[in-house]
Length: 387
Ligand SMILES: CC(C)(COP(=O)(O)OP(=O)(O)OC[C@H]1O[C@@H](n2cnc3c(N)ncnc32)[C@H](O)[C@@H]1OP(=O)(O)O)[C@@H](O)C(=O)NCCC(=O)NCCS
Image (cartoon, rainbow, N blue to C red; front, side, top):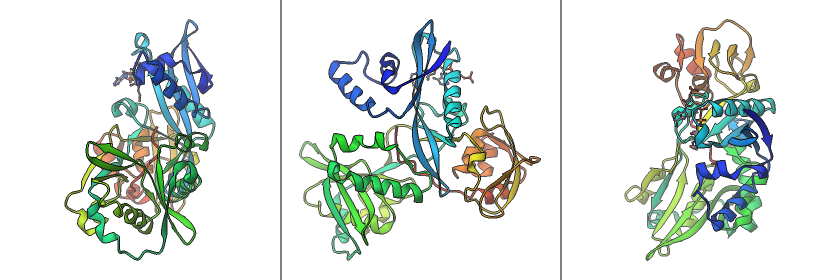
């Protein structure tokens, strides 16, 4: 079996379509698929071949992600598939290891994916992260927001016109929000080019502080304002967006908005408490892993100094002393006091697992749990970019 890199437009549609699409694919669906794939030109695509015929494929999107306040190059893994006749022979293990290695060489410090089954990717060193949810409510529940005096205003237009504002807010949140990930612009512009969303933006003091891309769906006699994004830099941006939605009270029967894992939509307005429904989004929760410990040098951490050994991993196995005395992570060689798997280490870096949970889940041996908990305080990542 040989592995080689191809350009995204050379992808063998048989492998990918068979795994992820209606297959064999009707012509109209193929046109849509090809259109979507044309925005992946920046992705790294690897295939493996048997007797010169491509039998597996995996790709990586070049994203950026905020981890504890610093922005890192992140490899977003997608389109992992093997043709049925070659499954369970270890081909994907080899292909994915090669892909992650190449992304690491290119400077990607971390990697995120949306698994078909979390236990499959746990074997590749990934740890689960919280799943975004959505809230569904009647806009009359927002009525107390209509009269609010807020220091800002909203602007309403189609996404093709407002895209630069939308992208600008994404870039802003990338620098502000733990876990937040942003696509390369070459892929992000698909939402602008398709032009299937309205965009409401919230501004204050000349700054964009909130944005929601939404469409209106009709379900029988019901009109539903369905937002595919609901992004804000804080309570003012959120309130400005919700005040705009409140103006739809006698127009829409329902509003559906995505909710970050650390938000409580029942607290957004007084009368939202009753009829609000909050559910996880469809699909699996994201997972993340670290590809280079050294690349995390300088990340904001809590005080403390601990020697760790990361075991059983092709990329980050080794002994490191993690020193947060200055408030920024310093990494030197040294004797380990604790042992972690790659998933255990990712759980600490992303802030999703406490040392106690890591031990309980069999992801490490940690005699000094308090020290490691201080070094990596809990945080709630919101990945946002979905692929
Ligand atoms: C999932 C898929 C890519 C696995 O490919 P594969 O070539 O069979 O994988 P490998 O043989 O390299 O197996 C890698 C490891 O995962 C395990 N594994 C394979 N398929 C698995 C499954 N469905 N569930 C759980 N573990 C699985 C293997 O036992 C192996 O473990 P080990 O290395 O510890 O022994 C393949 O079945 C496929 O294309 N499925 C349809 C598309 C899909 O769901 N892709 C994933 C998208 S996120």
